[in-house]
Length: 235
Image (cartoon, rainbow, N blue to C red; front, side, top):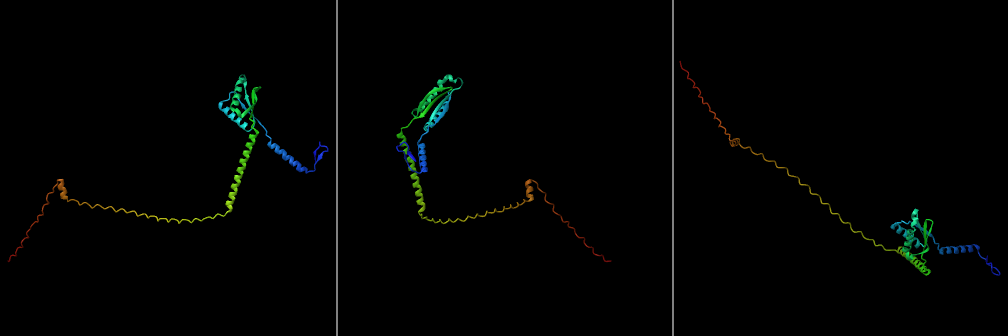
């Protein structure tokens, strides 16, 4: 393969062409990996935007800048709003002031048709600082990997080593106390019958009532004399 065609005499090298193409592809891949591509994001505002909507859109702008992307801020005018273009300019200036040192205005606000544009770019960091941050991140990642590897090794050694397991004797089961038998219910004694009340003597009761009976007439026994037998007369 010709290596230096402009040399006198030209220089050629005998090599494996497939290997040469593979190495060139690897070099191109590494170059693309270290190459940074900057994207341009766009976010739109309205002249009558409310406070909360403004804060939400500002957070999106900050997020885009932190991702190393440029942001194109657009103010959209409708109808007679073009008469008050200063309101849109005030919003752009307010946004630039809120971002502060975290962004740089590449293109100042300008009107094109019914829209007003402003281009904002993230602040470029010092290459040394970027290298330090990248080195610190790589070191932290390597330390995390080492700690994870050590943890897995420790777990492996613990599994391999036989660990004597002491068999715990079972405690004697507690004897169950015999259930207390229920005492038979005491039978109720039969009700004592009341003795019959002796009836009071009738006379006494009647005397209490004020009624008195006449004494019963005594029975007179008729005394009858038997007729005397007549003596027979002798003739």
